[in-house]
Image 1 (cartoon, rainbow, N blue to C red):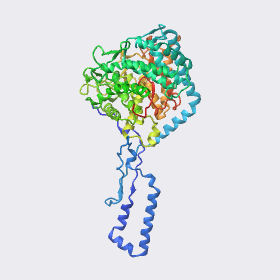
Image 2 (image 1 turned 90 degrees about the vertical axis):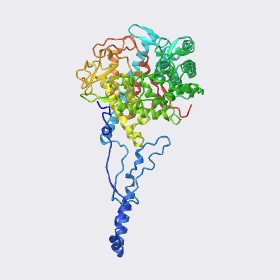
Image 3 (image 1 turned 135 degrees about the horizontal axis):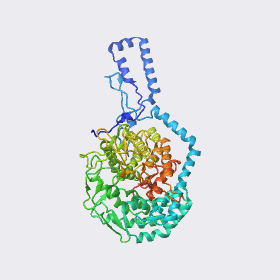
Image 4 (image 1 turned 60 degrees about the vertical axis):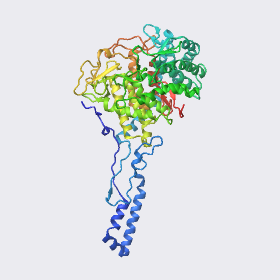
Length: 629
């Protein structure tokens, strides 16, 4: 099967109004330089008068229509001082070979359909903004309070709640992960009681936990705990944060604990013989070691930079950023497959291991952090990250993007055995982070309308934004195809010439029942955030209210099938049957990511604006740094 992109720019609708403009110099040359005409006209006063009138008329037309002419360079986004496009202006003067000048290509414009759709969406959103979306946002806050109440009652101080068993469990090192992961969500929502309870626990108990606990995973501890502490520090007023009147301890408590934790996590970098850190750290010993198989996940080693960079910025100590950025600088030098990388890397050799390429588990956030770290450090010498991102997304489009049959859902598959091996039409729910990342990478956090108005989008940006919207629809349909309206952990797709067959999602009314296959081992739901994450980014960037409506549908399904009356929410074993069997686990990211993104999706775009913050891969907002650390 062809590995070319299943759709092209013809799917992106632009207002390509064609026009031709007569060149002044060409017309003058036609009139004045035709030998017979020249002599005849200039021999009489009438001829001279006609020439003057003609020249005056042409000058008037040029002056009054000057604003309608767009040079080709207007459609090219200039990057960080680049002068590309400055010399692409088309000039007609001095060219006499043609009477008509070829029209320039116009930069992207909103098509009539897009304008109508956008205006209708904005009008509908504005009409319902106050009564409906404020009420829906309150329901999300209520859900967060309900989740916290179950955790507080049965698992306070443990990493996670088992809501059916009414007890806690430590699976992330015993540092009270739910408390730290949920704290900045409570701050954003204004849940003062939760802020006080979580902050007080951190102040009283976290220091001794950091000093005394054993093995933790570098990646999970960085994104959930270090990221959560740094975000809480900022949002509580530290470093001139945005919410200075929060309940709880002074902001310095969060920063002190973040620094103490990071000093121990640094061992994963300094103990490794290469620039690739070990996967695991023993906190009390300040020691580190590799995973049992000796390998680290590519995504995990490349998804700690936002947090360590920000800590260096806050403390003035560059050691955190230096160690973390060595990883990306090293990966830059390694061979890739059209910008794509295998999911394993060796700390011993510093080389990739195996050929498995995917944007699901162990690969996903590598691509996410390329663009986010560049955005965080924009204006510094990290432009190579943007280049790596651009190359990788081209590789995704060429090698991994396909359409399903019979109804043409756009999805991202895998290359389990590399480029020369077979294509797998398998897509983890984790891949649903990609629509949001693509949208963010296209507009750099600006709204689509503003970016287009200011001619900041290239045609490649528009292609990526279109791909983002198509993939978001697919992610939502993976929810809609099931009986519960909740997504499985993994979905497969039927493609031309390779029909997987097998069971569907159980919703017989879904148009895509024959496009999506859900295998028995993949039917569980872990309360994951990736789809609502992308809906949040796409709503912020496009303003299209359908993303809010889709988010509301997902939230209602969570409420209906995962809510536990005694407190908390639970993951599910099988989303294709009703009633679904419950799994007895509330992941920390349900409070730290899923409910946070839904809450922000329903709220005002001035809360955590995308041109001022980047969200780490655990949804902890981190301020953009305007200078090198």
